[in-house]
Amino acid sequence: MDTARRRPRIHLAELWGVLGFTAILAQAIVRLTPLALEPIRAGGMAAWHGALYALSIAFNAYSEGYRAFQCKVAPRVVARALHLGERGRPLHVLLAPLFVTGLFHATRRRMITTWVFYAALIAVIVLVRQVPQPWRGMIDAGVVVGLLWGVLAILWVYARALAGHPPAASAELPEEDQRRR
Image: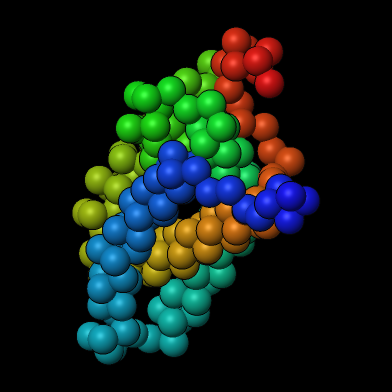
């Protein structure tokens, strides 16, 4: 009986949230990778272009991958997914990939932050589409690395949670759900 308690319990709702959100990120990686590689395939980049390309990758690996995804987003996404697996409402489960990001049923601050972030992200995407190569490729290469780091960080934190080490991050739920815990 003690062994049964130690086995990881995977709830479909939490799995749907984690895998659904990472699938959204993976789709962006697949779409952006050819654009990121275009300056390399085309050739003709000067050495300083290559240095800027590498700098974009390093900068995004650190800022987007490590600082944003690994330290903040992944633990919160997994904490929200675990909540969903334990106490998910039907609509929250249906929209689990959006729920885990904090787009709804979150603290006021989390929802405002998330919605403003995604609005700004859409604006940046529209602007970057106007940037010519090789500059766009440099930007996209950094974003691809940051997103890939993010996917791996989320899956790693989730795997650790399943192994009995849930993240210490807050799920940033509204007060009524915080009281029920």
